[in-house]
Image 1 (cartoon, rainbow, N blue to C red):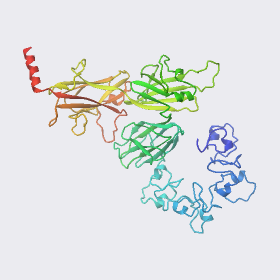
Image 2 (image 1 turned 30 degrees about the horizontal axis):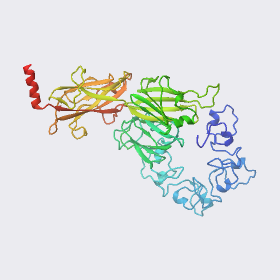
Image 3 (image 1 turned 120 degrees about the horizontal axis):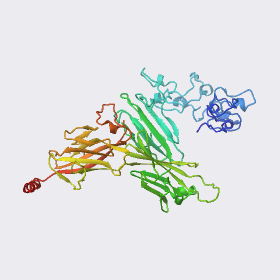
Image 4 (image 1 turned 90 degrees about the vertical axis):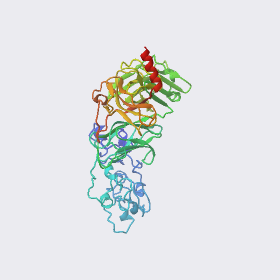
Length: 576
């Protein structure tokens, strides 16, 4: 785990984590004092352990480990006070030693070593502080602590931050620290989640994976103030907030992001007004796109590079799914499984209101002998239906280079006019010519039916233009609530399709054409407290709506019949 270890060898290397002896050892006799939780010189005289050293030269460089003098020296006369155990200015005036400095400029930068004033200066500055100082440094960061305004929420303010950089008496230095460094795969959340986060939060997480992998980030819960410039999460493609901007998550948009390197940075920022329950996020180390990918909609497509398989000692002919009759297509460069999402042995489950399809991709050993030295290959494939979208996770088991392949997708949905309330005959003519006040019937459905899902009509809006639904919008239904007095929903939120009707109208000072755009939600049929089941919801300022995102569909145009044509039809009916 980076600076420390839980391996049995940590006692030898002197880098055991602080609770190694209580968690991983049954003996009560330990060779290192766990209370120090620092790299130790025991068994390491003459060695170097990253942040400190047990070599004899450490006295010159001022980076001796805390117990160097007790473990590696026979003399009782030491040139450095071992109680400090920090980089020392003795013999080093004018030098710089990583986290602190013995140069004259250290007074300006606030990173003087603890004994700088006693060893290198004749000044009367009180050396008892001898810590990175905010004097002249407000807005800066000095390694172990910070003088930036955000330090109150990171919890890493320098000792004199409030006396030099904070003029108000209303300070909250006791707020819980947030942010930090993350590696590999895991989860993180906003401060106090699932409780309410605090005002003026500023949290930064730096996520890192192995050098040859990438990072996939997905938000599994998100409830922020309904104002994207007030409370938001910004994601950056690199090791800092100065890296390339990937995008923003705000309000209730459960977005996902993928890095182009092995670093990603996540910033959570809030203002001083409304608060909510914050967020929870998952991050995973993934394979590079050149090694493989997964695409999901109503079909699942798994694409693996043959070069990746060859590196493990396999080729496409070795692979099979839960249903071994489902075979891949194999080309010179890749192996592709493509099949409907409800076939080939896929297992469907519901996880916290989401639909998850899982399968296992395995490989036969290429040898018919009794033993093999090939790594066992098992790829767990899952298509996770996040609202109306799909996240796919493919991870590798029992192989030292294991990783994931992650992609995104959407359900396939469609919307169409029908001639009557029986919804038997679909209208195929374009544009659909109608009369004023004629009853119109529309159905929205999944192109490949799935009885485990339901569709809910959230918002339908009409416009005289197919490209602009904001300048002159006319709402039929909004947030599940009827707005037009002729709108009526036959089915919404209880089936894998939704049906509604309204009377035809036209826009004043516009063409005769009318376009209808609908935003629908897709929920698990078994989740009876989902947004799809709640019907009309009058949102208020702090209500962020459902966890189910939407898909927007467009149908139209409908066009009023030509008066002459309408008159001809009337004459024909009279003659009949």
